[in-house]
Length: 455
Image (cartoon, rainbow, N blue to C red; front, top):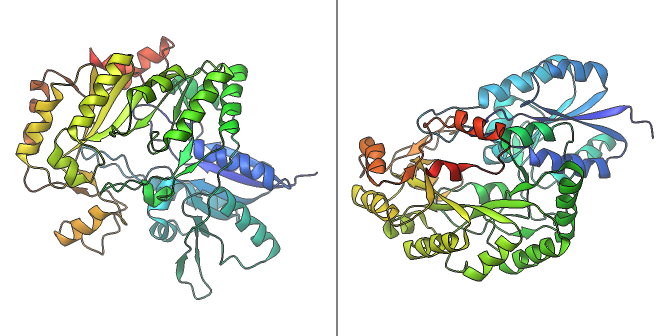
């Protein structure tokens, strides 16, 4: 087939703290489109590896009909910097428009949080909120045939009267093949020491601040185990990749599936270590973690948020400090590296609850603590409603520029002093870490590497 028409997919992300993240969402999209749109040549441009000017050459050399732009993050989620990426995204879409009349379609996690605002700000044609593979293919097919697009799930568009519309989503995919961009693997493997894969999508939790249910939905969809095993085998045998990170919102949210997956990994004989995000829920047992370790688990990043029950309750976490301590002890017993990610000063926090968090951290051995100060306020979350009710933001605020919720009952001026007094390893967002990671990467160390920060 003569593929004289092309689709350009752009990964807009350039944020690399503490290391660049492989654009896995774009690879899922590319793999799906290659199968379902065989009449098109699918091109990728990763702006972590290329300058914006690369768009000129691609457009000049190819008949680009559609351009998809994936927006991974909206900002750096760091109250000390408050770095926003929307100006950069505007540069990208303006650049595309200056050299091509191709239809521009937005997607990605960042876009899915602010779909209408970003479509309006960047002044492009369409967007896909949430899971993008099937909807994007349907949109292109319908645009090519001149069909009505108004029923496409997750579509964000302007109706015939120029009003922005956003369609709901009720259907999801459960079997997704994944082919990595082989031209880019070396860059991410050398700079990040890992590649990333999903085993499931969606999050059923109700944490008051979290955007995951907004992005992926609250219904958990597990991806086909055979496909995941096949992907891991290809990475290991063809690319010599021996570490991956499962980017599920929370890995341990479907025990039966996880057991089947890990038993399949063990049976396959694949020698790939892995890490994932976990919740220290009561349901996570010694036997679970023992099996996961046998299947290659080496690193756990716990989304713990606090070491105080009062604050955990305010944040609507599904566990308590007793569970946190138990899971930490199990990790130590099994020699699994683990870290705790925390949010200090958020809703319901007080000087007393904060002091309790620091005090309880002294009881956790062999861990690293990553505290984020305040809660980034996202629309369509419970925190958004709380912040409006308390007058911290107004309904007119679009929140594309980061705004943070800080409890009125905390004094955050002594945070680092309090952390240091615990004798434990606390790493704040503004602590410089890149040089440390670069040295270890140069020594061919793989994985997240934060376990080396404990010393």
